[in-house]
Length: 86
Length: 156
Image (cartoon, rainbow over the protein chains, first blue to last red):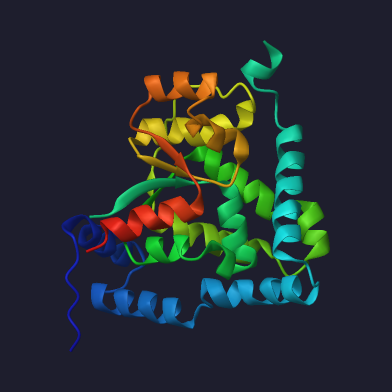
């Protein structure tokens, strides 16, 4: 039997959520853990993107330049900051 | 003890796109040696960059689900600063001020970046840098390589 020590606030929140879902706390916690284990990890979700980046042949420097370009575009669309308009 | 730090958006971009470029910075976060500071403006910039249509058009596999999961992962490990007052405006590029203001508010000693406008604040000859360092002596703007040395020195 696995026992997991939880901070009091977390345990309280877990009990409240379980109650709201009409489940006992153990079943609810087990279900949350099962769902977390089934869900793809961040690396798995990002893997296709990373593969596309590699397959595009972009260099490290090119990737940094692309990121900077995108950030410039993002910033240009934002409302001008005070110092720019002063 | 974990070192508090603010990472520039471009480091998150590297971590998402080509993780080896962001090593060992994000390994430090995952290993608990570094605690990231995040706030609304910095998080919005990271999200806006990673969901930018121009980027997604080039790399369609960069899905919203992947970006959300990536951001959630780092949010879970970060210290969230919801209210970040404007303590300082970086004249050379006011948009970069969000990183400095987050570090100042969070009392984070390091802003880690490759951005020259930010890094020049540490130039002993820079007038803006002298002013910044006098006003906020506890905040250092460092390159990833410099920060790596700081963390490795602090790690027993």
